[in-house]
Length: 409
Image (tube, rainbow, N blue to C red; front, side, top):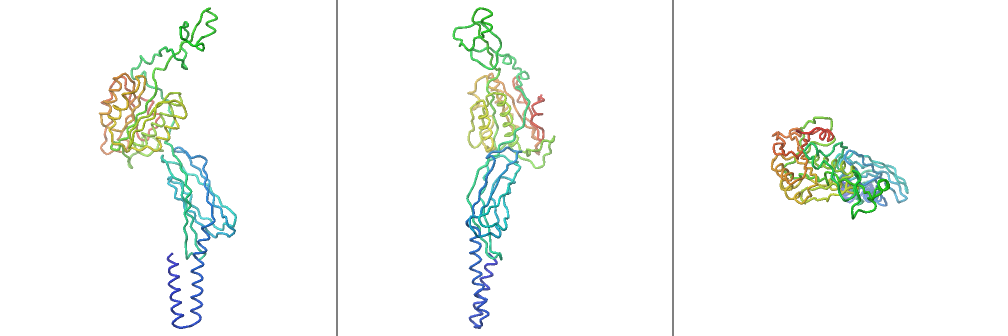
C-alpha cells in the first residue's frame, strides 16, 4: 500500500502541474496515473476472487512421533489467469508449513501440493484458515482474502511398548497371586469339579461327564487383580520443564517436562494393559475432574488417549487429596498405579493408606534431578515403604521399558 499511496501523491502532483501550467503532457501523465490507480486494485481484487481452496488429510488423529500428511489444492474457477498468488496458512499445528507461492495459474486450472509434518507436541490443533494474497503486476496494490475453511487435528500422546507385568509377587501379594475359583466364567480354566445346582449347561465338561458317568463342570479361575486404575498428579505447582537437562539415555523424543512424561507414561501403561485384555480406568484432577470408568477394549484405549491428548497440568488440588478422595470407592481387587513428580511425601502416605485397605499399588515417582531441577529434590521413597507397594523411578531420557524392568528398591 505504500507504493499505492505514492502513486496517488504523484497523481495529485501531476494534476496540480497540469492546472497551473496548462501543458498537455501533465494532463496525459495525470490520466495515465489515474487509469493505473484504478486498474491496480481491480486487478488485485480479481486475482483473489473466484478461487476455491480445499485440504484433505488421511486422518484427523496422529500420535507424537508420527507424520501428519495433508493434501492441499487451489482451483481457479474463472477463465482469467492468475499471474501469482500467495497462499498463507494459519494452522496451529507446530511445524506445519502449508504456505505456498503459486505462479501462472491458468483459467479453470488447479494447483496441488502435499505437506508432511513430524508431530512433536500433543494437543488439539486447527488446520487453517488460509489467506490468499495477490497484487497487480507492478506490485502497487495488494489484496488479502481469508478463506475460512478449517479442520481439527488431534495429536495423541506418545506411547511406547512395555513388557511389564503386574508386580504382585514383588509387593508380597501372594495371597491374591493364587488364582481363586469363581462361579462366573472367565478365560482361565483351572480344572473340573462335580456339577453343582445352578451351573449353566455351557459349564459342563462333556468328555469328563461321559468318562465318569456323572455331570462334571469346568472350574474357572479369576485373575488375582481386577481393573487397573491410573491416577495422575496434574497439580500445576509440582510440574516443571527444564532447558538444561541432559538425558541419561538416548530417549529424547519427549522434552524434559514432567508433565509430558506423566501423560506419555499413562498412555503407554493404558495401551499395554488394554492390549492384554485388562480393564483400565483413569483418575486425574486438572482444572476439572477427569474420571474414566474402568473398561476393557480398543474403544477404551481410544477414549483414554483422546482425553490425555488435551489435558494439562493446571490443577490446584494436591495429589494426596486426589488419592484420598478418588480411591476410597474402588474395589479391593483394583490395582492402583499412581504417577506423580511431586517430592511431597504426603501423597506417598495417602497411597499407603489405600494399600492398608487391602488394595495393591504401584507408585511411579520422578528423579527430578535428571529433569534439570536446580534444588535436586529427591523422590518421596521414604514414604513408600509398605510391603504391598511397589515403586518405580522415572528418569529423563530413560525409556519406559527400562523403567519397569528393574525395581527401584
